[in-house]
Length: 402
Image 1 (tube, rainbow, N blue to C red):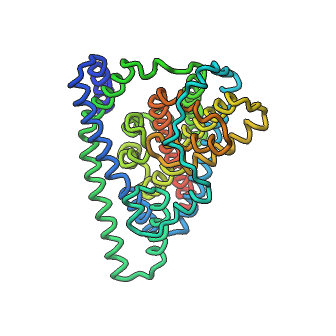
Image 2: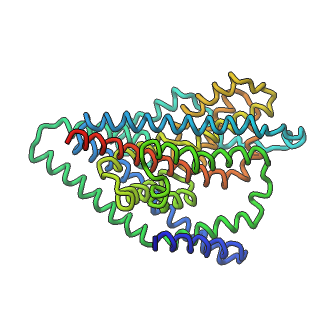
Image 3: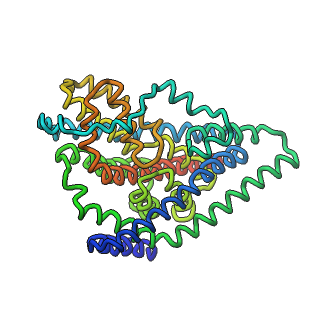
């Protein structure tokens, strides 16, 4: 409770400092925020790899398979729910068409469009160099390597060499968690900087150019998923949503300001284990996977933005079209990288593939910072919920066996 109050106080102090509009102070806050983001990104990649390898190596591939199946089930259910909420809100609120002159004057983010097919994307995930995925931060490639190494270790016969390798990996993991705990200890300073950075952007008019109903649909869908849908999932598994959110607040706040679920992963894992009490074998296996595939906020953004852009291009939004794009948004979100603006770039690519007016995304860009923050916080909250539900499910099974 004491730590939570400190974080909230840091949030308030940062917001006030940002609103002061002092140039040198804003530069200092931007510097501190950048340093914190880079430090967490530094720890994120090795945390993902070591967590998956050690879990497979010590927990066994058979048990991990059952946990993965449960994780995937909860991920798909929550992601479909997020996309469906977005679709329903879009139909109810019904954003209108933009003026013709606004569309014609829009700047197409041409330099950000990646003209690659899904086949090329899949091939790029399969590594041909064991070092390159670490340098590129390619989470999907790293997960493939980690799965292969972890399963390989679990299948090796017990020997001194296997024990040495496993203990070495576990030792490196404990060292990483020590570094993470140091960063979390200093997190209030980071929160002050992040909050000041955000409030300075808002006071400068970053959100003044919002496009009304579209933004209302996106943010409204995120809020409903965050405060209604995900708590209902927790209640159905016999978990207290208030307790889970209270325990996971550091990770949710970190995600809000870093706009990267991958960079937030070290905090998410540490918080899940130390504050929420999730088993290490569950947290260190489920959360890295969720960071890669569990993108509730991204699915809702892709769906709503795609519908909005297609509508501007004159595409009739029939029930069939909306249902198809719910499916597309879920599949796309599952393969999206947990990095800042990942959903935006993915949506640009999807709209480019169907020859929709991609220039509309240039109008959305000024408000995307706020959208990205909210949906990333929702993604990490969803990751936490999935981990908590999987932990409860397997704890119940253990009790039954006893």
